[in-house]
Length: 289
Image (cartoon, one colour):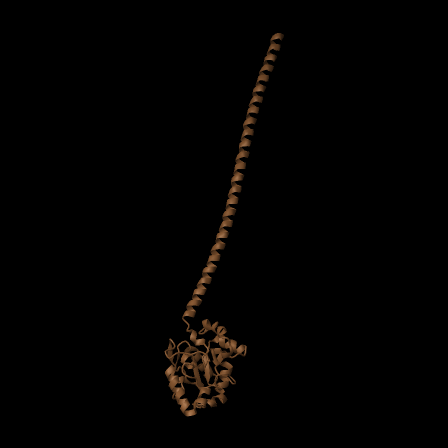
């Protein structure tokens, strides 16, 4: 019995050893599988991280590209707007008669065929009794009416004695003055045909019922003082102030040069005919604004 028992113990030990070896092999196998899985996971994670980084970099590049493209688009839009503005300016200039700001009165010459593109009739309520030259440049008329209406609100009477005069009308008028006053005197207050601002359709001779047709009386009329203080607000300037180099002092003769230019002349105490023509021309685009 004792021998058998010892034999069984050895068998059991052997069995346990085999079992232990099997378990150890199984554990080692499972560890190897688990290690391989971890390695696979690490590899996948590494690939995912690389992919994410690549996608992030690609998105960043796309974002930078998008911003760059937007910068280009904005730049083109700015250029397009500038081009549009330039085209608009050129179109506006092309539709504005450059003669309207030229320095006539013995400086430039208008030929006998020149007539403003648009002439409108001045309302009778603004005319001095007996006025015959009652047309004015159509784009000047709204400014003139505003001036006259504003004066009336201040109880100032202003009437139009003369506005547009054609080349032939000026020639006839000058001939009459020469007969009445003599050539020397007539040349002091009346322009030859082609040199008159009236042919432009932008100049007017003001008077009042008090001064009437005797323009020399207009200097002492309250209307003249009102024009001195306010005419520039509506784009009008005195063409021939005292001590000018062209004609004798004409307080009744005013020319429309646009609000911007008239305001500049007033603020800087300058005279239209003393300005360089190139300086004057820069105001052409704003003439009727």
